[in-house]
Image (cartoon, rainbow, N blue to C red; front, side, top):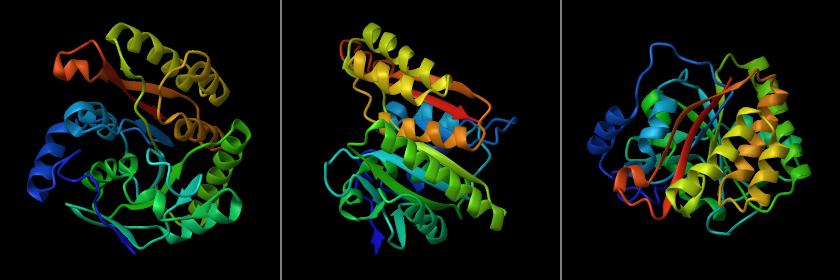
Length: 271
């Protein structure tokens, strides 16, 4: 099965040339690249969050394989939904699923179930793929969509992903990065969104999945990707992460000029 684009022409250009042109504008290539274990990037339309995502993608070494973790916005499918079809298609071409890494993750965590339903209309992973193709046209992916997990399940999944990466890279000399797709505060006044999002960013930079879950719950922060980002933190700590860096932060208000109800976008690299 090949997963066809669901939001091309809506979240990003549906035309190959226009998409490539926009990516060239959004990705800020840095001379000093970071060998990232994982990244946090937003998933709104490129008009709104593309510059934040582009700054992150421009700073990292192009990966051979990307494990994509995104929130389930539709409520369809399994709680931990692993797409095990042949590929994802974007206007830039076809991206193959890395079956070996897929299988390793599935074997190491019983929560992970093969499922296509959760992926059919989900945009949180799809919008990341053209950025990855821009960095490496031969990139392979492992797409995983998450919903309704508690902290212990997040820890179990994160550790399984780290173990799978260790096993895979011991046999294959390939660069693997974990991509956690998330927007931050939704539809808050600018000042409140910035205040709440600063709490989120602080916990991510401390590499504290427990702290992140706590501040999101206690402060009622409408961060849609708290599960993917928490899982990312667990996995990268298992992979001996040494730190994290905030690359960019912005809101939709910075684009539209309407600061009465904004969405927050953060770009972070864990290394």
